Image 1 (spheres, one colour):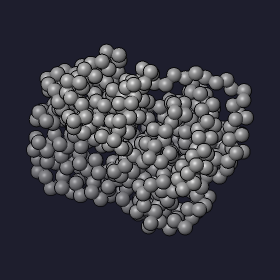
Image 2 (tube, one colour):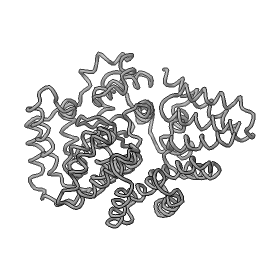
Image 3 (tube, one colour):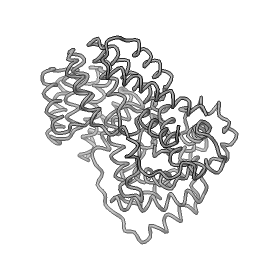
Image 4 (cartoon, helix red, strand yellow):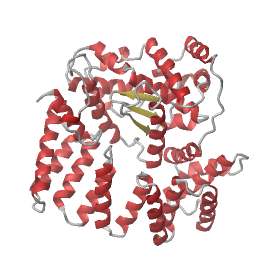
Length: 482
């Protein structure tokens, strides 16, 4: 099997993008031209991302994912590679860190978002990571080690990811990796960091953020390091910040005027959600109550949002009475009547505590305005599931999967549930196979397809699809074992 055909199969299997036909592939050049080609980057990156999606620390929250990818792609659009595919994601981890790995994947710890004073500061870190990807710094590090097969490269990249992410996401891969003794050699060089700083600043300015927030962030991290020697920020460990590096950034900014950039209210809403995910609803409620006393309108709105989200997440009516919650929601929507995050909040509240007919109307109306907003989709799906409206659910998910450029494992999971309730076993197992493939469990995906083959309720086209998919996943499994 040629490298080009394997790339088609792999991208289809892990759904990095929609199904790609051979004649539509971009020009990747010769896959064997260098030690770590673009082809290998995509294969290795997708393999690691599957493991990350299966981690309990991976944030599935659709609003968080929507926000971080919107912010990330605003920066990518201002980079030298605006057409390059990226995926941005968040991990629940209180440390201040961000990291990138092959294939255009950029991870951000919840601690970094919560500690960012403003959107420009957060965007400054993301632009730095985008620069590491576009300049192929990690690829260069790996290529410098050895010429290796894809399986070995995936293990080596997993070792790098573990050292950069500061967590145990890929601990199993690292412990079995021959690359483990090399971890001391896998840090970015000073030249890499300077290049990422330089290009990141350019991206930040072009995207209309304030690049002067970058050295402020650096100095904040350095102060933390001096105050808490035992708790050095992870970002400092993986991206060492020297006085020369800070001085170099400040020199580059000397001729660039400061910008007054007004933060979006979305950042404050996202911080509220992450506080609840990271610390729990009860622990976070005190902060939200304090925010209600702020003189800043957006901060007050964030406190209200956080309290309602805490109520929805915990279903603990001790946090707030339903009457008070409804008054708070009404006020929020009076201030931001068309905000999709607030419409989703209203739908979820009515679905869980209020009138399901109102919830249905809220979701339906909002989805006409924001048809691909995942938070609205997820909420409406839960309403359909709880109402046994499985035919509607199957139709909705099939349409979304047909239109989606990046396949969402939750969409397959929702459709599989609908098929299960409709007693369509072959289709159900096929969709569960996609859920497992997208979360890095190839063995589980293959087993689901074997179960699909044993089912007798599918037509010729569905059976052919199952057989073809099983063959593809087995090819991928063999490739990753090399």
